Length: 428
Image (cartoon, rainbow, N blue to C red; front, side):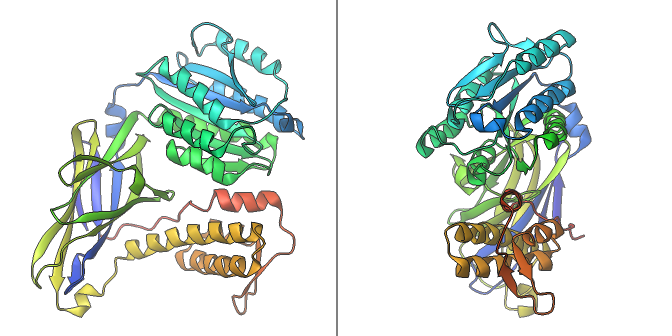
């Protein structure tokens, strides 16, 4: 495994560089690690936090609305004094409820108290139009373009009061303006809608059953956002003439397909935005197709760089060596195999749940059977446990059967968390 370190960022490449004669595909797992020194060395950014609360009528159910109020107050308590913040009321429209007028306020004892009063005055009514909420968050972020803007979006329902096209347009317009973590409370939201927002805006998606669980979750999201000190990292991939990048996927800690986000920036160079970073480590699966060479010949298949703006802060090399020795070419990188399986696991879960909802038990059973097998093989115990809330597994034969009754929240939790992967250690 090759590793190169730049100014505080290491890029480690894990692959089997040996290809059989005539083979044209190279796979590599690229581990990017931003060290504490690198994250701390970044100048402290101006921060802007936006909390978007679903205030539609359905939030009156149970403890959802009181839980949302308490969670927002708990998140505000995490803010360092001086942090810019705003609270947005989301219905079929969107409205800034704090500050109700004038410029954004900075976190202080006085502003937190005023924000709590504004929260106390909110009542659940109306509908749900998440694209409209994102549009207002984007306008807020535009007031402070130099700030690292982050939003938390909470909902309990479907995006019923605007079209899917309107939501997609607002997501597209918000790219690069702010990051967004999405949360669903209860079980009436559509996980795919939340995932579409969070994925595009470099955030997380998760669900909670009760409003009482929101406060701890909001605090954790805020702490995670505040730990990120680098506004944007970019993965820059150079390939030789005649070669093409088939895909670039983040595979840990969660699966995100970055292939469609490529921006061509020069001859044979494409860049993939990685979002904001703190001191952390993420794994990427890069697959390159290139022209085969004669046995014994070595080629550079890709040069992987990590950049902050125009400055390269880390780099690694993906190589290809053709051989007639089957013993060499038949080896599969353990980490490539593991993460390929994790990606298949997430897809199998989502396809199985979709088939179940569409009334296709045969496909649902087959895909969820495969998911159970992959979860066991890869040691993804969290997903394995969630799967058992939807299917029954015969411990003797391993055969899977759909449960007759499934708790709607359990199904949503499995869907939302299906992209979380089990890490596998780097080979030395």
